[in-house]
Amino acid sequence: MLYYEWGDTMKKALLVGLDYYKGQKIITYMQELKALAETLNIDVFDSVTQDNKQASPQFKIGSGKVQEIKALIDVEKLDLVIFNDELTGSQVRNLEEVLGVPVVDRTLLILDIFAKRAKTKEAMLQVEVAQLKYLLPRLTSLNASFERQQGGIGSRGPGEKKIEMDRRKIENELNTLENALKSIVTVRQSNRKYRQKTMIKTVAIVGYTNAGKSTLMNALINASNTSNNETKDVFVKDQLFATLETTSRRIELANTKPFLLTDTIGFVSNLPHDLVEAFKSTLEEIKEADLLLHVVDFSNPYYFDQILTTQKVLDELGASDIETLYVFNKIDLTDENVPHGFSPAVKISLTENKNIDLLITQIRRLLTIDDKIVTYKIPYSQGDIVNTLIEHSEILNRKYDEHGTEIKAKVSKILRTQLKDYEQ
Image 1 (cartoon, helix red, strand yellow):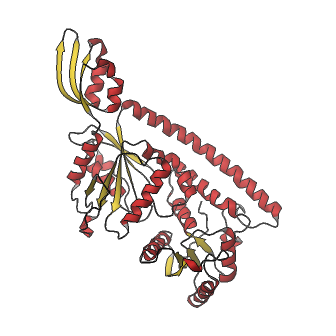
Image 2 (image 1 turned 90 degrees about the vertical axis):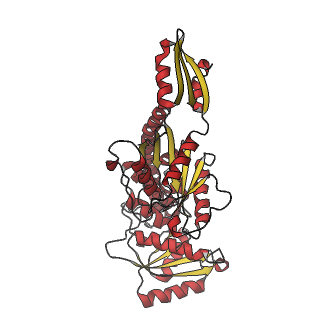
Image 3 (image 1 turned 135 degrees about the horizontal axis):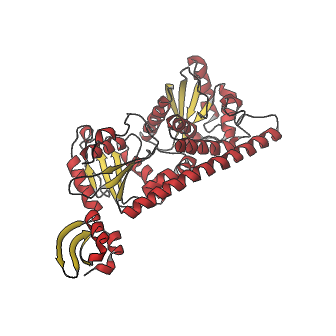
């Protein structure tokens, strides 16, 4: 469901933001807010900002700025005001009473984009959980102009009894949705355990939204020796949050053992916490990865802030200690050098197919960085162990005698642990 009923007519909106940054950075954040709005087919008329020192608890911005915005709305016939900052329910109510048009915040905008993009049952459930958690603390204050789709949930009822009924209804629905998600998570965990048994390594692509993650995945799919790759490309579109579903493909690169490559949802500054929480079951794929490919839009003047945003989410997921390769994309648009502190790193251009071979070399090196050369003596009665070594290690030498098979191989840490009893 879409949290706000946007309707079929294109809305003409004004963007509003508080400037905490003292520089050009606020312009970038407002441009990002504009891109978010346009994703929902909203026509952005203009944006206004105010020094955060003028902020007020009543309206978020100063009362004088509210009157300026009111005058602009009346003259330009605007339909909607979108705040870059998250608003409380009472702030939304106060603003709407003065401005006379609906007011939404960045969090609500992102939630509705996710609702629009969600295609699978799991993604739909996750978005709805986040939406209801956003709504719950705002029940007493949200204005009736939101026109909720769920039978009155979220609209102000006649008195506390109606509010309490809505609260209970939302809490019950949250419980139902979270139980439904748990059953899906159980299936995902079973699939993950199976992959772990097969000892196939996993590589997860992470990064800011629209940095080129899905394009990178397609580049590696096309470089893979896996058959019928033309049917396995993932969806790519130049827009924010083009895909929400986690997509995995088996990749077989030359001179490299097969690995599972996973593309995940993109991150954005001030990504709603409840949304991260709701998608944690999907994002668990990141936490279980052997290697992260952190894709960076190197052409963005504030790419460093985007890196920090991604790292913050990785910290929340408990994935900050995983080996990471920084992939600085779009070098066709910039000639900057990779800054200190980001290593290992590779500079590429996916649009010009530049340095993809260097990227593959780095992936190959990092996936085998903990491999060691070990010699094993395997009895003939343990032929399955020989097969495991052939499939999951690099065989350097093999000899046979009356006691069994002697194999010298380059072996991963997890496999060395399992076969330590056979080491020579």
